[in-house]
Image (cartoon, rainbow, N blue to C red; front, side, top):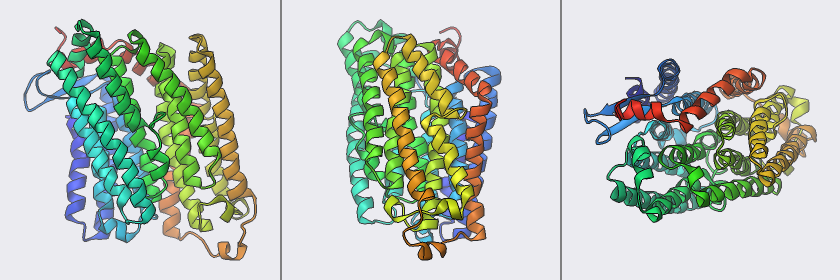
Length: 499
C-alpha cells in the first residue's frame, strides 16, 4: 500500500495541477499539498522498512519475477524520504521564485512528473521499469529545462538531451542483452541468475553498458559536460531540484546494479573503471568550479566533484566504503539543494549571479551569510557539519583498502572546495557591491521572505542535525550498506523466502 502510495501521490498531483493550470493560486496550493503528502507517505514507508525490513509489492497480481515489482529496502526508502523533503522545500521556495509565465507553461505539472520518475526509479524492482522511470524523469526534466525558451536554455537543453539519448540507448541495449542471456529482468532474480552465466563476455559487456548509461546520468568523468552546460539556465527552483536529485538517481542505479545484479568486486575491470572515473570526477569537477565566476556554474561543477566521492565509496567496495557512499548521498542532497536556494536569494538581493557584479551582502543581510556558510562549510567537509563525517568515512575506507591516491585526491578536492566556497563568500558577501545605490533598492517582500527563507532555514537545520547528531544517520547508512552486501532479505521480500 505504502509503496504504491508514494507513486500515486506525485501522479495525482501531476494530473490535478495540469487540470487546474489556468488557476495559478490553486495550482500552487495543489503543488505544495502534493509535496507535503509525498513527504508523509515516504516517512510512513521509511518507518515500515525500519520496522519490518525490505518490503515488496507485485503489481497487477503477477508474481515475481514475471510482473512489475515495487520494492523498498532501507537505501531506497531513505532516498524516497529525502525526495519528499526536497520536493516540499522547492515547492515552497518556488512561490517566491517561479514566475507566472513558467507556471502557465507547466512548471508545477512537470515538477511532479519529475518527482514521479525519481520516486519510481528508487522503488523499481526490475531493470526495464527502472528504464521506464528514468524516461519519465528525463522527459519531465527536458520540459523544465526549456521553460522560457531563452537561447542559453535551448543550448543547455540540446546538450542535456543529446547525451541522455546516448545513455538511454546504452541502457536499453544492456537490458536487451541481459534479458536474452538470462530470461529475466527482475533484479532480485538476476542476483541469483547472473552468477550462473557461463559466458563472461555477456556479463562484462552488459555491466559496461550499465556503467556508461548510469555514469552519464550521474555526471561521471568523462561524460559530465552536459551538467555545467545546463544546470545554470532554468529557474533557481528547477536548478535546486536537479542538483539534489537527478544525478543521485544515476548514483543510486550504479550502487543498486553493482551490488545486487553484479558483484563489482568480482569484475576487476569494472571496479578499476569506477575507481579512476571517481577520482577524475572529483578532480575535474573541483578544478572546473575554481575556474568559474558565476555562482550557479560554480555550484554545478561542485555537483560533479561531489559525485566522485559517492562513486569512490562504491569502487572501494568495502562495508565501510558503502556506508560512506550512502551517508554522503544523504548529506549532499540536502546541502547542494540549499546552496542553490541561497544562490537564488543572492541574485534577488544583488541583481546578478556573476561574482564580479555583486557584493555587500554581509553588511546588509548577515543572516543570509550564516545561512550560506552552513551548507558551504558542510560541502567543504569542515567539522562538525555533515560533510566532514561523510568525507571522513570515505577517506578512511580508501586508506584501509590501500587506495592511497584516491584518498589523497579526496583530501585535495576538499581543500579546493574550501577555496571555491571562500571565493563566493568574499565576492558576494564581504566586498562592497560595485553599485551600492542600485543594490540598496533590491529587497525581499514579506511574502518572499517567508517562501524563500523557510526552506533554506529548514535544510540548514537538517545539515546541522546530521553533523551534530550523526549517530542515527550513520546507523541508517550502516544497515543500508549491510542490506546491499547481503541482499537475502531483499530477494526474500521479492521472490519469497523459498527462493
